[in-house]
Length: 171
Image 1: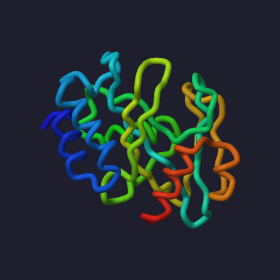
Image 2: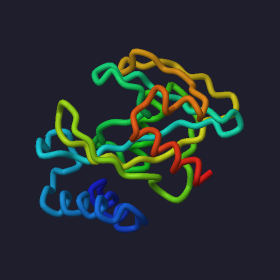
Image 3: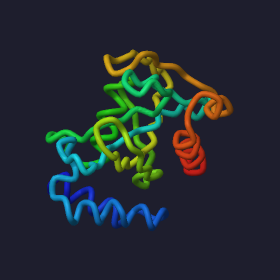
């Protein structure tokens, strides 16, 4: 199964955000290249909010280009077999943490936002850090930091706050 086919199946099975979910599905139906950064009309991306539930904290990256505190995430790559694998790859690469585990049940949220390259139709997952997690900053970040759940609204935008709320509801 291709990454495109997986994305369609994941989105068809996603419950909630019906209107936005349909925007994603319509985009893929009209843009066979809608998974890739080269699609200038917009493209699907995959992200992972890294959480440490026992310590009630979340790991955010200060994005090098956007200069905002965000969850880990980015563009899908041809080697990604699934959206979940793409989100896990991004989470691992940008956090430096081995052994992340995605929360079961598929994506936590969808979020559509404009970036300098195009519209991102982000499929957002949550990843639980292992107890011995040690983060390491990547080239894509200016900083990488753990924030208590209650601190996120003070540093991140509303999309990250909504993602954290949806993640906590699923924990």
